Length: 636
Image 1 (cartoon, rainbow, N blue to C red):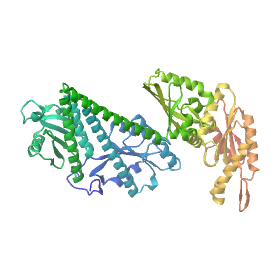
Image 2: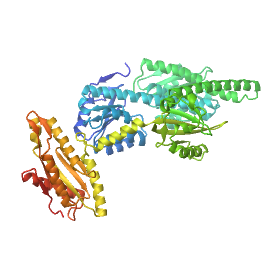
Image 3: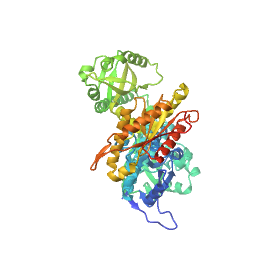
Image 4: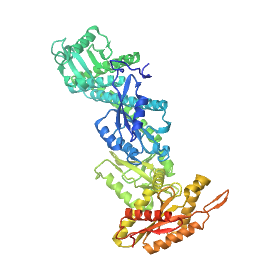
């Protein structure tokens, strides 16, 4: 059965697989993941084609491989590598910078909580998102096969599209040698598109069918792939004997010839012109493949006659009545096509999820689709004929009008402009952020501007929440380590420039392991949250607290000298020691903290130096008995 997946048995002394391999790129910074993936997939084939692996251990290595290979079917991509979002950033580069929309991408993560699946699927152009722990051999097999099937379908559709474009382009013009070559080239592409194989092939005709030369001489009219250089050449001079013999046999016997990898189609047009199409495949053709090819051959034969007939018609322009009839028929077809295109366009506009609005040169609305009705709260009947200003906040009406006027005048360099900062106004008065793309069309009635508008309220909220989560400790709600260090670095830079003092407190919960071991981690979490609440009530609004480790916190005190920092540290220590942190079955739970104090000085001017000094002081406070404040050495 075509497309059947099997685990191949290894053969000795020969290649176990018939077809060229599917290329799979493994991107992961863990060598064992590469080994396990290769082991799980080593014997997998799809459509009688094996797998070959390219491997990268970082996003940087993956970029180099992607720049050198354009036939990668599947990318198994780790999320967290050299950075926490290296994999996610690489997805955007693959789709945007490399322009690669064909390769299937499956994200794998060992830390599923760090990048939530729902948000990743919505935000990034990927095909699947899996935790490494859930990818058993069976699930990995299923995931890979599904991705290869999708990639194979995409490639086949692309081949079909190219072939159709070439045939349509050839049929649209009068018969010329160039047009005929385009048509013949499209035939080869269509054959490869139907079979999902490469484009290696030639299309040959007898000289007699082309006019001139000996009637039995073969002539290569079109060629593709490895035979590209044979175009417009005599077959006997450029084609090897085996291929020439196969083509001659197909023309002589007037039938299709199929071999394991070498195949030849016999085509005969209604006007008795004969040609042969030789092509190679990387697999034997199935019965279904042959049926599809036979249907395609009928259409190609008719199409070739139609192309050649165009030239005959162009040479008979002396017959005015016939030309008028043909022109009338062409106009009727174009009218029907235009009507069909109008219906299709109207259907697209009606079903579009984005708002589509058209305005005339006077900024009056002429088109308002259902999505726009849902977005703005107005009906089309209420908006058509009205000024565009009813959809805009008052503070942007003037500037927006000037932008639209300039765009309508044709002074913009491009035919399309996007203004992500645009804001719209609903019927209720609510203002919302939107993205807009505008196109300009010059008609007999003047310039018409059509805008596609997308409400990005939800996306902006998600982006804001993601930024918050990236900078916040999920348990206590204070700044996480990276966010704290960024803020501290900025404050130290300002302190150095303005010569104002800055201090740091390094704080650790005493005997926190005993709390976790004795009462459980849930009580330990309550203690940490209660400690943060005490700090927030005790500190100033400009002070910043961050979680530096498990039970270790660091506090930034802007515009605070060493003496004041020591006072604040002692006050904070006393407040924490006197506050109930949690309730347990044994009664109220109290705890103490040890604090190290350090300030920026001539010896410790950088944030890393001050943090190191505060950490050293904290260590001494714990060594001296805990529940105390120690001052860093060499601090003025």
